[in-house]
Image 1: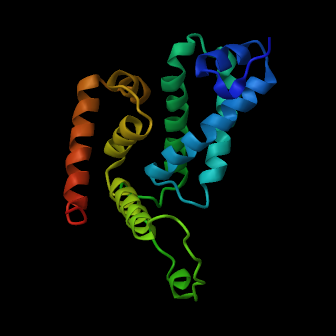
Image 2 (image 1 turned 120 degrees about the vertical axis):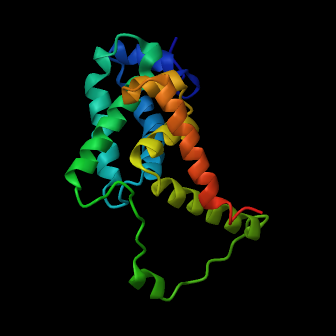
Length: 195
């Protein structure tokens, strides 16, 4: 009986990978690349470097997954890899300060834009949703790294406080405090946009 990888749980896929099933490894990579990309995007990684960083992370996961002793800890294990690579990225890019700023290219804004018709059911709602998403991303990027990492791991990755504490090598109380402060700062920054 062959395994339907698309419908299989993460646990089953990792078990198959440990049995050297290459198809299971492909499925894991396919599932994880979007998640890793989104995490790095919210952490404020430069758009030009994000794909290389995603590849580096996937390579580390692929090369080290056989060493994973407890499959149930995969999420926190993989997030440690993401964080290590993110910190390496920050060290390599010393010009990036504690708060990463998004800089818009003025030349891009002055180019003539071609209108593309929107055939969705509610284009105004889509525009507002996309605009709010950008506002939230910018607000997250303005957080200090320790808050940014905690809030992204909690809200985007859906990790528990314990998993975040293990990944960041801090205690649960510190994680809760950082998340609470991050939420306060985010609410303060986006309150003008939400009525």
